[in-house]
Length: 229
Image (tube, rainbow, N blue to C red; front, side):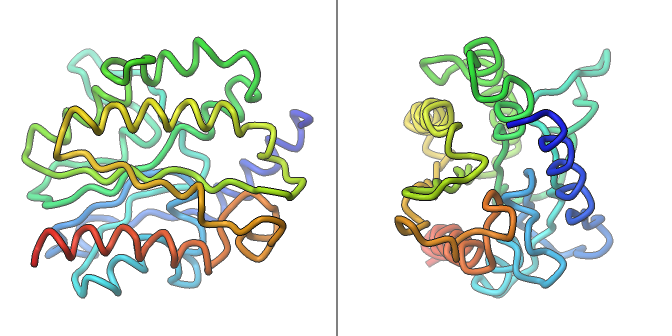
């Protein structure tokens, strides 16, 4: 995909994303951080965190923002300076809903020869890299993590279809990480979109339609509700 189109998509995504501040949901025990997969449809109250909030009947603090990257730099005292990692704030959270990494692959290496980017985010065995370190920091507080994967676009020509192999590898590594910690749950969205059906995507054929956000949100909410029953 041409670089200008990447930048245009990123700009549109940024404009359509938003972040809640803690004071807006002071009683929340669930926090959501991530990129446009998480934030998309928030303007209509139909984003993944909105669906989770509706289904569990409890507030969710949504800190996700479109165009966010997973990779980041850190301050001298180890605090992340930007992106998904900087969205997370300390609190008495029961659950953290997390996604990210797609912008790093799509915009960082064009979903081509992405080995160094992948390895920086998460190693082949799923045990090292920025993603495992980030999730372990969350887990130190006793918070459980639900890591949400990305949509796939079977039998559709979309701007993200060429990223499939990199996305598959990235999420396979996330799944390996989850196998080693009962407090990390990987939720796949690879089977959400039906072959050849563009209704599962937004106008850009990249981001989730409200239907897809609802399906994913319901999967996440089911995990949270089952843990409380």
